[in-house]
Amino acid sequence: MEKGRQSAKDVVSQLRGASFEEELDLADSYQDDPRKQVQAAVASARRRHERTARERSRVEAMYQLQWRLGGHGLVVGVDEVGRGSLAGPLTVGAVVLPDEPMVWGINDSKKLTPARREELAARIAELAVAIGMAHIAPESIDALGMGVALRMGMRQAIADTGVEPDAVLIDGNPVHVHPRERTIVHGDAQVACIAAASIVAKVTRDHLMVAYDQTYPQYHLAECKGYGSAEHIEAIRRYGLSPIHRASFCGHFVDASGPED
Image (tube, rainbow, N blue to C red; front, side, top):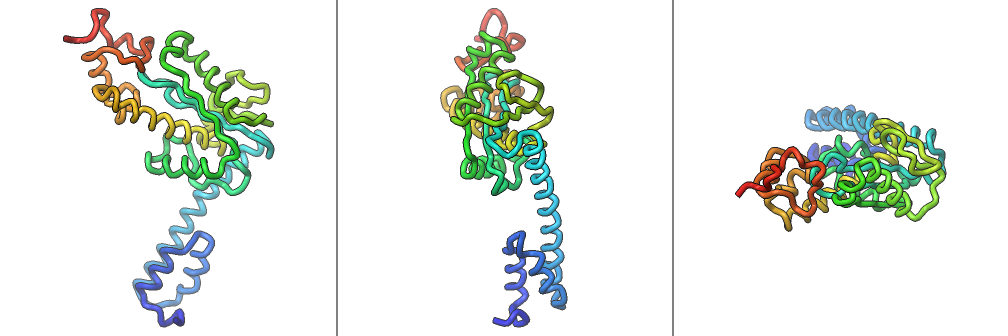
């Protein structure tokens, strides 16, 4: 069918379904179409393209910083989740990303919706050169303290990648877990491989806490993921601590006499 004979509905559908690479040229090809519905779709396509271009520039800058800090070899990004949780493990992720294709949309996991994190975790799993994961149990955190537990988790996650890294980029301050370590404050929002590590660690730990909710439903773990929500703290006061609680984190919420009757 000739372009000029397409219905306005078909043109709108074509514009909405166009890829990033196609949509600007397609919008240009319909810019003189006099139909109001088509003109609205063209304007929408141009705005969508501009938003996507800005987002891609943000992600490209994250890769550029990764390459500047770590080079183009095997660069492991490392991040943790669950540091401030009252229950459940400290989880550390370590990810090696290829230079291409880029994982569009990656960001600090805290800036993403749960649904978007799930989508990106699946994409990272599909593309990553290597992924490592470590869980440090609550009893180890209680026995060793968070600083030692964090270093242990990072070493384990890096080792779990199964690669010998050319560089290790870690979110936060120096932790001294690898001779090729470089640390970047707020690295999870600035460096591609660290952002990827934050996403896979968050999604992995969230799944674990949802599973724990089946065993300990009174603590609302599926909702709070082990953090100190009002409902979680009230449950600790009422029922005491479960085997997955960090006793050293919960002293303010548990009376020495034990849970309420």
